[in-house]
Image 1 (cartoon, helix red, strand yellow):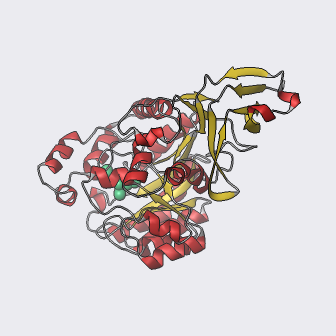
Image 2 (cartoon, helix red, strand yellow; image 1 turned 45 degrees about the vertical axis):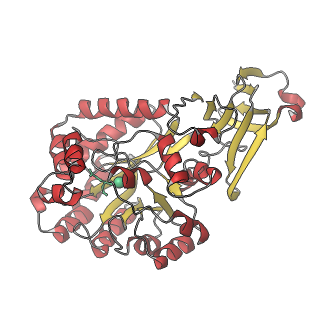
Image 3 (tube, rainbow, N blue to C red; image 1 turned 90 degrees about the horizontal axis):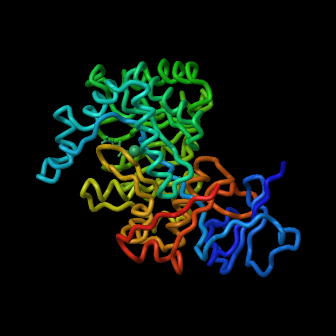
Length: 401
Ligand code: NIG
Ligand code: FE
């Protein structure tokens, strides 16, 4: 049977438009007609087509409607936490020093390897629940804290189980997130094993779970050449590349993303001008993670303005992980986009909805135009700008759909 409903009594609707890169529509006193879970019509209530006049009503209670948030970069599943390390960093020890002592990512790898499949699924449900309550309706999530074939497979199985339980989740294979203890001093050897053996094996053992692949290209981790090898192998398996690039220094990661036709290049605090131009030309989505810059106490905010000026469709993401951004708060990311990356409210809103959905190849998410999935957030505000303006204020949306 056809499901028809009319979301009415809205103070307004705010939504990007996939047909226009950075345009945001504000529709006051709006209504949204939903048919089989998709937007069939939206506009001012007084223009509602007669065929919808008698549809079942959902009362918007005078709130503003926006599309649900899409988070295109998380490391959702990991064991343990790194709060002790966080406190050491506050005492002046650097992220790099902690990593050199065998802590950092390696510590999380030890904890993740100990976690059972059931524990990982339970952690995933808890974190996804928190994100959902804050308005995240779809996200990307990476493996990469296992760093052994067995443990990466368990992470992938846990993601598959979360998908089966109905969470809206795109999975990214990332065994090349760091160099595991077993390959210490041999990043080239590890990149080769990941490219030639593990990725094919992971895809074969859990077919259809992962859609993307990723690698951490950075000084002291993987070179662009090794990154190319890992991502090319992923591509040959039907995965779409994403890349951790230019986070602590310029390493040519943005250029590599463009060369490989990656869906996104992420971090980019130190992306070069040539890299920015190349991303714009190749339609790579620069995915900026201002929560990480904040959490690491860095001052090198990614050059969002330069990227927008170059024609890039910038996205914002949480980078949720235990070491460099223990944050499950999409509003904080939106606020940092405005306050530190100097994006306008409309740009930042587009960067947490439409552009991440586009980089995840999800045409029907991240906006509320006709055809979109009817995943609507309802906010109790007089105007959506308040979500950023009242800094630190807690807003909890109701999610429809
Ligand atoms: O995306 N850059 C690499 N990886 C993570 C940090 C991981 C960690 O510290 O556990 C990131 O920021
Ligand atoms: Fe990351």
